[in-house]
Structure formats: C-alpha cells, structure tokens
Amino acid sequence: MTGSIAAIGAGLAAIGAGIGIGQIGGHAMDAIARQPEAHGKIQTTMLIAAALVEGAALFGIVVALL
Image 1 (cartoon, one colour):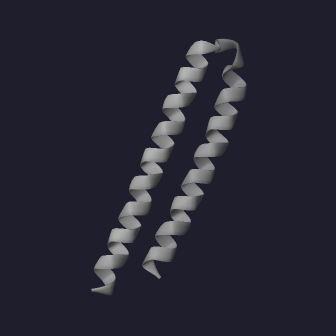
Image 2 (cartoon, rainbow, N blue to C red; image 1 turned 180 degrees about the vertical axis):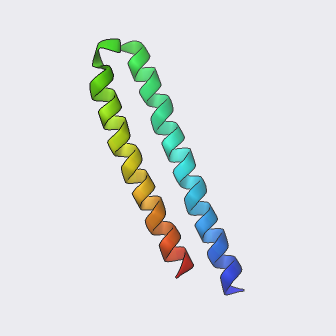
C-alpha cells in the first residue's frame, strides 16, 4: 500500500513539473512574440525558472519515494 501511494505522489510531482515548464515556455513565447528585442533576457529568465521548477519536482519525487 505504501509503495503505491509513493508512486502516485512521485507521478503527481512529475506531472506538476511538466505543466509548470509548459506554462513557462508558452508564456515566454508570447512575451518574445510581443517584444522580439528582449529575446535574450526573456530566454535567460525562462531557463532559470524552468530549472527551479525542475528542482522542486525532483525534490518532490525524492520525498515521495522515501
């Protein structure tokens, strides 16, 4: 029983990260389409935010599996 609950928690963390990174990428594309001259700054911010979301998801997966 405990193993299946941990698997559900890890899966939810992975799904949440996928949704979050998708939102970040989509909104970054919208921002670049509106202001192409700010491409570098937007891309850098997007990559940092995606890395933070991925780190939080990895932490959630590790906690769920312990």
